Amino acid sequence: MLDTAERLFREQGYAATTVREIAEAASVSVGTVMSVADKRGLLVATMDRGLASTDESDDAGRDDPDGDPVARVLAVLRPFVDLFADNPDVAREYGAVLFSGVHDSRVFEQLAVRLIERMAARLERQGYSPERARSVSRVIHRAYLGELFVWAGSGALDPGDPLRELEQTVRVILAQPER
Image 1 (cartoon, rainbow, N blue to C red):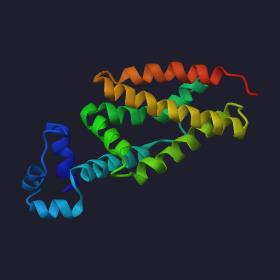
Image 2 (spheres, rainbow, N blue to C red; image 1 turned 90 degrees about the vertical axis):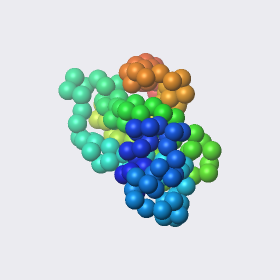
Image 3 (spheres, rainbow, N blue to C red; image 1 turned 90 degrees about the horizontal axis):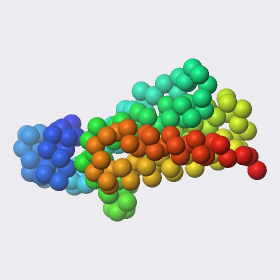
Image 4 (cartoon, one colour; image 1 turned 180 degrees about the vertical axis):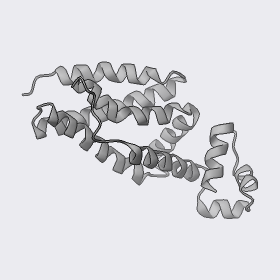
């Protein structure tokens, strides 16, 4: 059923997809769909699957060969930007659902921890102290979330937009001296 909901959200858009259509396409009753989750819950579940799948496919050991710390940090975040860029309509709705507080996402919360850890590990390999690497990684993660939501809310279709903006932000953050 989640596969069906995900397909319909991507094909028709979240707003245009109804629970009844999901039920019909999955050959189940509306009650069966609703026993799994309401429409917003289905969206969170489908996006969480995408996030988890992208997270599992990440090659945490892969680094930019030229040793540029900005490139190394962006390599951690790029697959997730691409996931959201694949369907901006669904990304916008997912963000709205999470912000509403009606549905939460353990995957989204756990992913935040792992992304910060991955970025910190890469920065430590660049010579950052563990404390500085973790602190900078938390700030970069917040900037990443901000760029995603600003981009999704703007209606822009170019997935390069948040990456370009994020690259500039990461360069500024990493240029700050340790205090």
